Length: 325
Image (tube, rainbow, N blue to C red):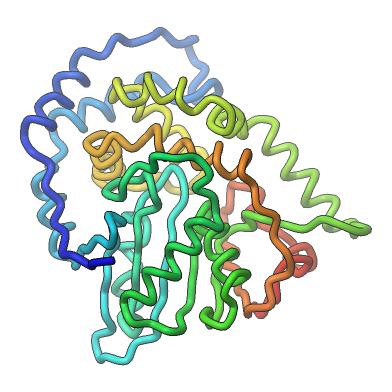
């Protein structure tokens, strides 16, 4: 496989079509005073789309992104930052949904002593849209091992959140001798076999309560992603509403409009929203079951975590992982 330089280049014709579609949005009504209770608030989305169409500067965002070192390997897109002083510990970081490689870019200055690789998952952004089903955690983990070896790294760390946590887990499971350690920001996979402690039962009950009001998107994306994709691929308003609702409800501080517009523009221009939804289908209907991960594992448990699966009690995480911190 050949590693090639890559430059982001989204043309004006695509951007002009995007702006025209935003301005032609046919808006629904909203129950007065209901806010975000039934989804994205109407006035918020109107204002956001106005900014996306009229004020957001994609050429400036693109120029800034192209300051980084982008590459492709057999089509897979990734950013590669080598350690400032050389001899950095290799580290591959994998995003999830509804995100992209952009999520990890603010961390690059903090990781200047590492050789950092940030790929775009298959079917996201500038990575190719898979032409078959079954692209699950294990398939991606295998491809990431290949990528790191192509870059000349025999051993490396792996980190991720959401789907990225699942990928990092299977990197550690399938080739533990190559993985120094893994760092996860949520418990994407778990083993709940055997008696549960009271703390674990409370955690799972909290998870279920969150699922009851927040997990509807996963049900449709893991069963009929193609149906949803027609609307999201054709309508900037639909795309923005589907993704922004998650960025609002899953974060304690909503990211900047420029960050969100950059992410949305990449999804729109590459037409990868439908293929990104298929992650849920592939990991449900081509599921792979984890076993105990012996590779040293660390979890990032953050203040104001709003997604229940991100706050597992240590004893529950230790059912699956060799938790060191």
